[in-house]
Image (cartoon, rainbow, N blue to C red; front, side, top):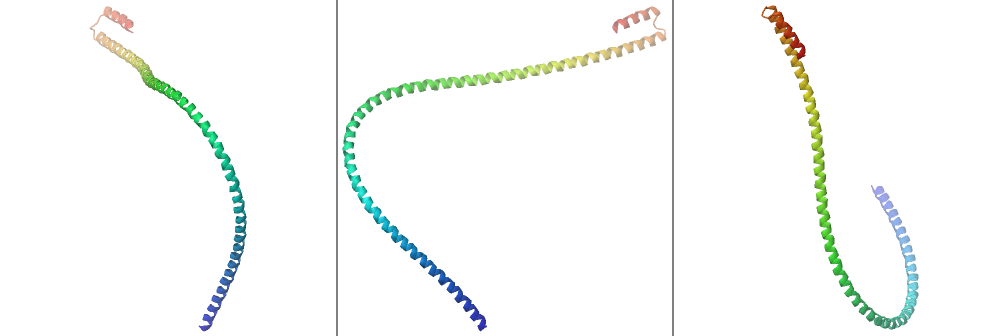
Length: 193
């Protein structure tokens, strides 16, 4: 058991050694970074000196700009007077545009009403077209029914002719009818057919 404990302790010491080596490497890297940061701060100092010189030049430019702004103020007073006149003209133009907008709204409402009327007319024309199609269909159906009725009437007439001939033969064979009546009945049958 003691041997196992010693082996475990050796492994633990090896791991601790590895961690210490990594920590040393990390501290070396941190030292390098600190040297780079020092160089960066030196460069930043140089940049700040240059910035101070730039600000002195900027002060001179600001004095010149102040004089320029005074001249510009005089120009702006004249421009303000011009803008007042232009504002009066713009008010008049706005009133004119409002009137034009009212007319355009009325025209839009009129066009909407016209569009609604055209849609109603289109629906009415579709309904009329459907009614015409229905009329044609009904006419075809009526024509078909008339043909069927014509055939039925023809069949009924044939049946009536056969029944009348059978009745004639029956009455003739029984002696109820003479030869003159049989001749008239034959003529009537031929005309009927």
